[in-house]
Length: 279
Length: 182
Image 1 (cartoon, rainbow over the protein chains, first blue to last red):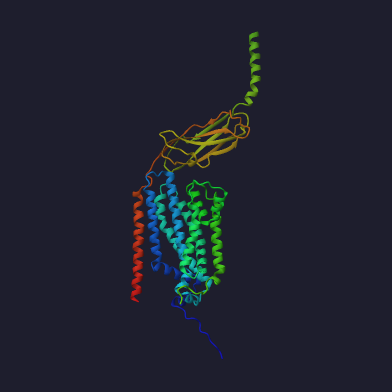
Image 2: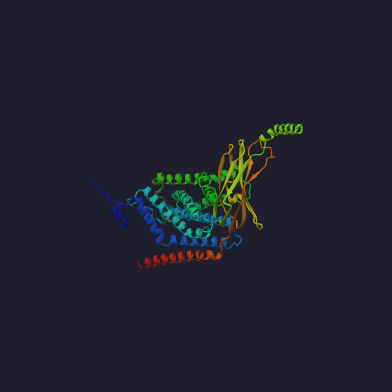
């Protein structure tokens, strides 16, 4: 007796894309981006982001005592805020990547598509990164308003883009790793936000506190704190871009290790487990 | 005649005595700064050049040229570090040698300022009694310009969230309508 097993039925999207010869990660990224942006979820996050950024910019600009140097600091403040919230948004979206599929019971459908599991996870990371790029685009007019008169607009934007992209890749990858380890979306998002808060905590310490070697180690070991310290060193202290390059080691390593772990462990991460809402 | 001989002898002795004093004399250095006047606006970047020449007959040894900025009108607080992060340059000059040093500055306060370069001997052998050599002042006039105001930020602060709010509402309700049509 010959047993023939029919291949799983493909959705319209996969059939069309397979016919066009698009790589799997591109198909997943495109679908994830469509879900994120046409559902209004991404735009609502952008709207909330812009409201927050408007509030910070307005509060900064109403300070009539601003002088030249303080204006540089205000650019630094708004840029750091934009990078931090943009990375947070990326982390939240990526934290929904795997656990969200499990919770909604759509993981089975995803797994039967003719797309490699590694491609699924890469596509999800790329889709999450689009939110970072969108938040960066939104922050440009705010940085322009604050930085146009002090001649640091180009530097501020280049810094924000480079440091923010490194952080977004690193933390987005970590968010997906956390998501893969969780069956519940709530657990995944809560763990990711907790991680981000822990990473941001050292940046909120008063500058007047004595800062010894331990603080320096803590600062440099933390990708967010060291990335933001690099931005401050260039924007406020006027250092050259090579002078404090060591601050970028941790964000770079986080991006490489996070994305590397995601790519290599992808096939093991995207697996079917029982979601909390699954009957 | 004898008086003349005595006078000549005295001059000779004094010259001989004065000879070591010439060797240990303060450095013979000339410092020239240009341009003499700088007019810029707040945040403007400009460069001052100083030419340091060893006009003496002995090597200068290690010397340090140090840039300083001072407010010469009103009571504007000046932190020279903010004007130029690199304010010291170390050099040594042979007799007759001349060196041009460039100083990059950025005007971080509005008002009337003077920049000057001081040349001091450098190293552990400095006694502390050496003479300072100072360049002529470079007169810097920095015009203020409108700094950040709430009015200037208001169009961006209002329009960006407004546009994004409208766009997200349009997309959200469009998606809901498409869902209900199905």
